[in-house]
Length: 286
Image 1 (cartoon, rainbow, N blue to C red):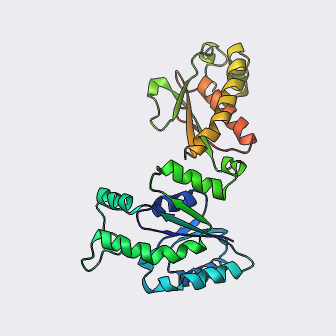
Image 2 (cartoon, rainbow, N blue to C red):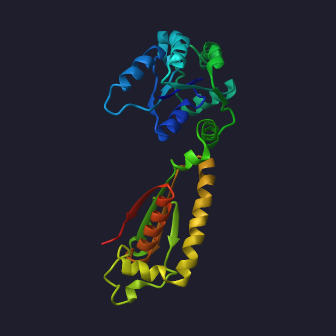
């Protein structure tokens, strides 16, 4: 079982990091007292579908249980069936103050009238001994979310593994019914001759082999498909580096019946055969 303990200063980005692990398939638990982590892992082994990857967020809200942190770390590292990684996030005091001012939330240690500055000082002192257990330490003072995600990716995932988590969503639609607002890319396929004007194809769709053969036999289609495939294939890695893990490509034609359906089907098939996660939707297909 892969176990990640995510800890560090409040305001340093633990919530964003937790979201990254969730997107990668980790079962994530917020505010987990360290002493209970071992019990949770043992319980997870007895369920019908055992949890293979888990991320536990540990912070000062753990209260008195927080003192069990070192004992928990030692126990997990000694377990033969557990791979443990500890991630520690921090930022400068000035940055943390600014972040709490921006979101207008109380610091977890701001109780009984303790000021924000004093709460941050207390937390820094409290967390300092934990750094020695960290496998990955990230200073998020100057980070955007994408940079934080890149740091996590570089440590936890190889590029080929990242590609297996990227999702390509292919759509077809008809311009006469409006452009889909969820699309990242709109590809106008009306440059291809329209099968609608071929009598025997008029009432068929891009799901029929006769329409597909007609669309794919056009010289412009033969040029377009390999070039477009290469463009998308190349740009996936760039999206991943910028912290984006899905891309919705919508092919449009006049009515969303023939050309757009054919292209969406073909691209979905090509990328699916390459091991990329894909989805397929024909919005206006009747």
